[in-house]
Image 1 (cartoon, helix red, strand yellow):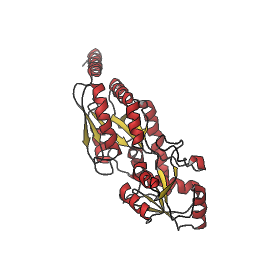
Image 2 (cartoon, rainbow, N blue to C red):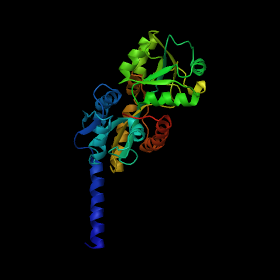
Image 3 (cartoon, helix red, strand yellow):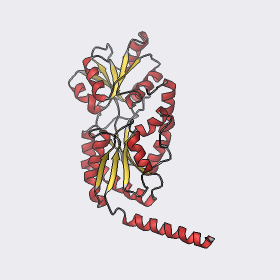
Image 4 (tube, rainbow, N blue to C red):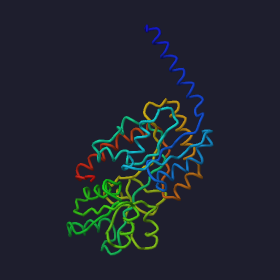
Length: 319
């Protein structure tokens, strides 16, 4: 094939891609959720399913593919055709897992096209009523007076709550023992029952118990107060940098045409920014975001090495 023929073929391919982007979408869009129904990723995907489908003119079809610490479903997104008809609703595991697993079937930094962050949610640091401390600084003093005697729980090894606890342990220079559970439900149950003393967990799991007076909320992770929890101070306000804030976001396979990424971003952000959608998210203890693909891409690149360092320094192992 001559150079001219190669150029013509390349030009025709570009024209075809451009035409496809202009008419996109022409059929339903599959949204892979790498978790079972009922979790944060599933809830947000289904909320967007109802609203964004109207704007796109095609149905969003939620496809739950749980397994292997979310890597099974996430890999399905990475290996899908980059034509805009398969996207994924992922969460913070995308940037945590590269530090936990040495054999991921995908490259979290390179195999995805960021669309937008849908929402974030701070972690609540809840403390059982039996712990003789009234705030974070008193708790740090107590932990320093009794090294190795206090414990903190999480939803599991390598979870966001675990990493938040490791951040707190490092910045406060305290010796507290980690107790991993198999999910936020069992963790919260034992925290309320006093089997564990404290722990970072999701607002949805623990705030009903805070309101009932069974546990106390000493602070939230992140750099600013949450619209859904305006009365709870951040750890940063109290002198400790704990910035483990879970996020939920939409990604596509790498190589998807920018026009299609832009079309999806526009439709999703439009819905995220509506008062009705934002109010619903705040009601569910999420903080709405809706940013650009470039902003989301920068977040991914910054978070992967940050959590890899926390995991390495804490010597976290997944068995």
